[in-house]
Length: 187
Image (cartoon, rainbow, N blue to C red):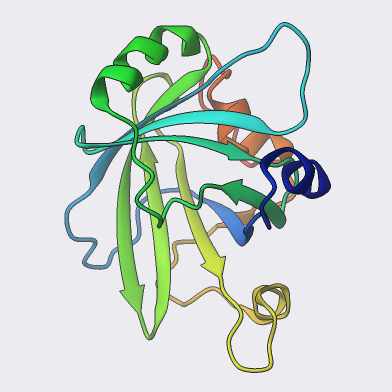
């Protein structure tokens, strides 16, 4: 998929390295204010690799992003941290095409000791699902992938917490198709 992005888009596709865990409930730390995320996935007549994601953050920022298949490592274009917003009108026009493949969640972003944690509390039919994500960026002589393998969850993460990085059922695209929150414990 990364080669496809290079060939079609003519760009070096940014690689995202992240790990994900399912938590039984929100951690007992200061989380701050959550942002409401609405995200859906545009469907095609035939199966295509990766996903085309439509996302609204806080009802004010709107994105159309392509993401590759993968679990720990995959490409994302454009990267969310770049200002490639789409107009609200385009988001609203495309949103109905995500019917049956969308979700809503409240995202808390917490930075502790230089590590940013994304804590998602799902709403609607996925209520009761709590996920924690950590994205890794290369620093010094360590690759993002090396850092991800060295990472250990902090003590404030509630137990039992189960890593779901490699569980395809916990990819947001698949959660968006789910009728209800996946069973606990995951696996």
